[in-house]
Length: 352
Image (cartoon, rainbow, N blue to C red; front, side):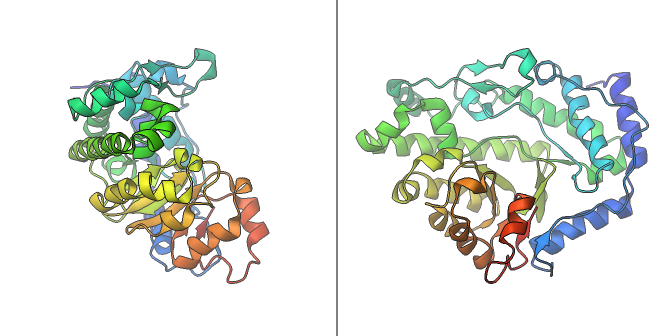
């Protein structure tokens, strides 16, 4: 049995004392109203009606320390919850926070820990070797506890075990799913730039790799759900986003593909994950307006989170999201206000 340190116990007690069920129910219901089409305004932001400052100071923990120590990881995640209780807009949620390379490390990619003074999540090194990918496909699904897998599952068990002793934390602090990226992102993290050449030279191998990654993602998430079950209706992410469905897929690598290439090498795999997990949302950095129509045709897609509107033709984005009943999530406040006058507005489908 995991035994939290005295400092961690003090933070847990402080959070448990500060959680007001009526406030958190109201906060989550605001999100439900938005996500299920009952919000009547144009720009949505959930507002916590009462904030509470911490009585217990939370430490500033370097992520490099946290990834090597379960108690420090617990403290670091709880610090976010403590801060959220003193915020009008942040959600109460935590995750097993081991960076973008969780699934690529499960496949055997080398873990790369950032310099300590950067205080930045780790990732993995790409192999840049097509023969390695061919061998990976030949081996089939890896042991899910390879790489960061064991730590992620153990951290999930710790969240479940510890939170069970605090009824309000257990009910109102959501353990959301770890950062598994998305099939295309994981393929690029593993393969490196050679993946894009292989899309022309060996498309069958690319599809075989993506299929294996998608099935491994599914198996990892299903095991995760046995430890920390996800909500059936809406789920939080990052403290700033709630979405309908169970999965939030990262699709940063898709910015490098044409619409037809996205449809061929990404859409079906994204679609499989949305189908297998009862729908969800997709995040992308950079440009996505060129393939947004293909993306938004996927059954089960309920929301889109984009981080850099300045690289996109936003009218194209709006036509394929809010105009079709698909939410834009955690959008830039200034850009939302700038575009509010567009014909038809945001149709009550945009959150900041």
